[in-house]
Length: 269
Image (cartoon, rainbow, N blue to C red):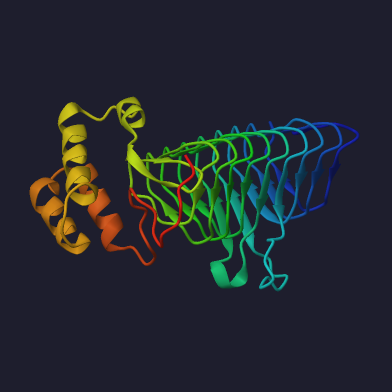
C-alpha cells in the first residue's frame, strides 16, 4: 500500500498506486492520480484533475495542478497530465488548462524541471525536455522532444519550440523556433544549430550535414523565404530531420525566429 506520512493530507477520492510515497506535509487533492513509484518528497501541493506518471519524483514546495493564471478561466475541471520518470524540483509550478485552450496541460516522459521553473496553462511539452532554474513558458506553448531551456529564459504565449532546440540562458523567445535550432541573446534570435544536442541524440553525420545544408539555404541565403523553403525541401527534404523542419515552417501560424531581429529592435548581446 501507499506510504503516507502522518503529517500529509490526502483527500478522499485521490487515487494512489500501492508503492507511492507521500512525504511530510504534502497535500493531495481529491481528483489526483499518482501512478506506481511516484514520490512526493515533502511540502508538495498536488491539486486539480492531475495525473502523474510512474516513477516521477516531486521535490519540496512544488505546486502542480493549481488553476490556470488566465482571466478567461471559468472554474472548469481542466486537467494536468505529467508523464513517467520526470524529475520536478523545488518551487516548480505547473497549472491545469483552460476551457478555451483545450482543457489540458501536458508534460511528457523523462522531463527535468529544475527549481523555480514554470509551465503555464494549455502547454504541451514533449519527452526528455529540460527546464533549467527559473525557465518559464507562457500559456499554449508547444515544445518538441529533447529541447533544453537555459536558466531564466522565457517563452511568450502561443509560441512553438521545435524538437532538440537549445535555448541559452536569459533568452526571451517571442517567435517560433525551428527544430534543432540554437537560440541565443536576451532578445532571442537564431544563432545556428544545436550540434551538441543532435550528436547526443545519435544523429549520423549525413543527417547533420543535411540539416546544416538546409539551414544555410533557409537562413543564410538570399531570396524570398517561401522560395528558400521550396529549395531546402528539394535539396534535402528526403532526410527525415530536414522534413521535420520543412513541415514546421509550412505549418507556422505566427512569425518564425530568424538570425536577425524584426522591426528594427536593437540586440543586446
